[in-house]
Length: 454
Ligand SMILES: Nc1nc2c(ncn2[C@@H]2O[C@H](COP(=O)(O)OP(=O)(O)O)[C@@H](O)[C@H]2O)c(=O)[nH]1
Ligand SMILES: [Mg+2]
Image (cartoon, helix red, strand yellow):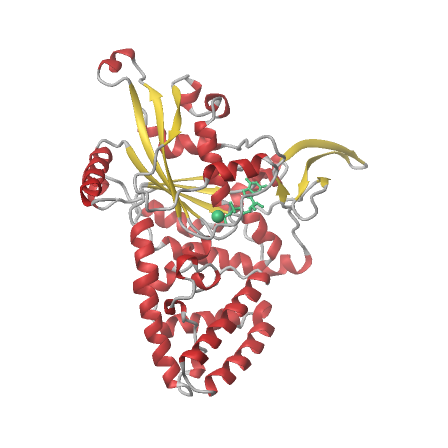
């Protein structure tokens, strides 16, 4: 893009933002929370020909004012486009889109009829441009590293690695790291240590650990093979024994902060107007107490990096703040409907502290239980104990049809003792195919953009 078109685009965007016709919507969630599925489904629900019917509880749709939406041509051809069409095709074919390996974006133009015909003399309809971006959830987990020094980051990481579910793995890793460090610091030994640490992170992921840093080691994107990724936390007790390693990794840490995390943050997160925080509460319940604690901690730390608060004219133009955040429990189609209320209460408890901070900053929040792609059919079965709710869907693990009662969602944070004698087992499902219908997206849209259509 030449400089003239860059300036023109920036000017046009500023004008639209002043007129409230432009909104940057961030979808924040850890890897696997369902961000890619949500963006695909959101674009689909808005652009499909029967959008008004699908979004019938959204007042502009209910009042037959929704004219639909269109995907806008890319304004910056150098940035990857979100593969909406491919993702939708996969969902319609009964598969999930591939896991995200890089950054991509898409802009939509939503059009709504004027509320009164006399307003049409000024403008035939109301329009809103929504910018969406997708990125690997692994990268989000780097944000908390911005506030730390290398020594603090190392201490925090090794404290986590010592937790019971990971201790055996970390004992093996620390022994190997010791041997590598003893060979002295060189580009070769550093690369070996990073390689072994990456394998250790992969093992931790299999053990359901959620805080895996630096995220680019697991999902490098275009940084694959660059020296910027030569980073690992050093056990705090190594510092004295291997001062050269400590000094070199401290430098690498600062480089990673400045050249990887900060640009990603500045470009994609610093300018959000509204936010969806997407949480897969069901899989953390499946994975146990330590995963639950890590999820809560990660979401709270990540949240510190977003600016929440009311948006005036000045903020909208120069220093955007998030004035509305939807806290969404994803994949509610994996539950029977009478459990949705429990899931909502559970999410509220999980995010209690985050929500309190957002409220204090003057940001409006909503807790919503939703699904991007409804993958189940609800029903009832007759049992010895009476009629029970159940659901039917295709198992992601086996591809076979399941009929089951997935279980109850606790209404508050379960203690470690609960996990010791109870195994949650919410199923993972595949799309049913032929359709991509969402649950409660009308409520989500009303909350997020309803006020932009008067
Ligand atoms: N049942 C169900 N599963 C979902 C839904 N959205 C996502 N998933 C599951 O979550 C996985 C990860 O979703 P994805 O969108 O790739 O997550 P991301 O890493 O946050 O982008 C998918 O492969 C599905 O198994 C949903 O609405 N319903
Ligand atoms: Mg994704």
